[in-house]
Image 1 (cartoon, helix red, strand yellow):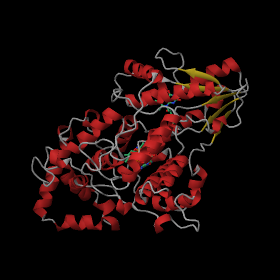
Image 2 (image 1 turned 135 degrees about the vertical axis):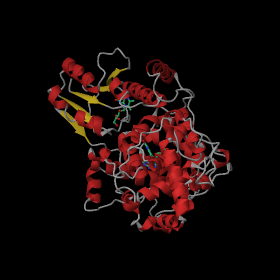
Image 3 (image 1 turned 180 degrees about the horizontal axis):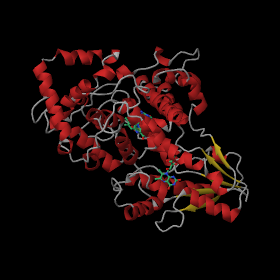
Image 4 (image 1 turned 90 degrees about the horizontal axis):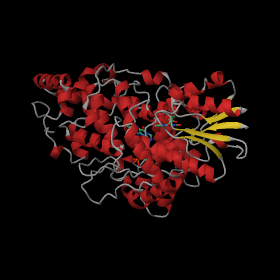
Length: 510
Ligand code: FAD
Ligand code: DLZ
């Protein structure tokens, strides 16, 4: 045997660098479902089913294509329950020259793998992950000497680098880099949202669903109504479906929230992008083509591409530049525990109930639910970053540390002191009312800040502004908020703060 080639559960692409120049006749490709990876957080049951099923389909395809594959299916009584144990046993059996793998997406596992050569007693070659537009060194070079990083400037570099939506003379198509101002419509039920692309579970997926239900019964969420794609071909159909049915409205309703509709016009492609079933650049090229062919407007196409070559690449760059210290940041000094209703959805705050309920059913919530509902509440309530980060890592099908952590700790919790975002996305109930129809079905009154039925977001928002005066009052983007706060009568401010204090003491009862 020449080499062992380890492929992780989020590296399911035959273009993965670990397979470069591999020899089908002599190398052994290893994939393993292990307890360690399945339980480092309370992974949603649909996330476990998705990863295991996609891994099994990928392994089967490799075998069909002539690779020698060692696949370990999960069983609680397997002797080897960590990836290292699986590799160590194979190394003893086959005496390979070395282990080859592609760098993994989480610091936790990356640290372990970088030490394996010692225990295994053989070289471990860790290759760069080439599935991103911007390499780690390239991002580090771009960030060098900048005190704060701004996605918009990075994004323009990525547009130039990829040529996406660029004219032949190097200008952005449509004369603007960013059409975000056009992407803030409220959705009133029309045009109808297409619903998610659905794949009926095949035998492999059904077996995995049974396995998850049997061995991970206490994990969050449900396997019921599993409809995610689990192969590259199915994921490609999901992309085609998005382009045909949702992309035309993606931009207009990108920031909307709905009481009736879980998915709106979002692509639901993140699980496939993050596990290798889809290539990010190919996805962006297909979406750009939709604009060139007149099948989708520029505000939708530019907005979508910005999320992928802008935000997605940007947060990854930040993660690898600042780990492991980044995960410990808590610059706002938060101390509160995550309210238990994040796990049950049992709260009378309609927007939170709806976002958490969708999360439990689907292992998915769209960006605005994550940012402006569950995230905003955790920010205003001063939840410990560590606890809210672990929640996001557990509950979403697309959650991997490299993308979840900067979004939660940086974008939502502002725990990195504003390194990733120029101001916190703190908002009162007014924002949720403007962008959704939740408030009309809510127990609380969005127009009130005080009184027992007052929307908790309102007083908590002002409490946040008041208690973090030192951190934010000098921020030009927040001057207006401080001016509005100061303008209120002292008695009113006192009453609002008292209401917020009462809420903070009774978070579990909301
Ligand atoms: P769409 O709205 O259709 O967007 C298209 C694509 O753009 C997504 O598939 C995704 O790949 C990319 N994208 C959009 N926004 C971001 C972003 N802020 N950061 C990185 N990529 C982005 N995304 C994850 O993939 N994994 C996570 O664990 C994750 N955790 C998040 C936690 C919080 C607190 C917040 C606010 C956002 C998080 N996001 C995460 C980003 C974003 O919410 C999801 O990518 C998006 O909701 C996925 O659904 P979609 O594919 O329908 O996205
Ligand atoms: C997320 C996940 C899960 C649930 N299970 C496995 C597994 O059993 N085997 C595996 O190789 N990978 C799994 N993964 C994905 C890894 O945790 C992932 O590679 C790291 O999170 C790095 O991004």
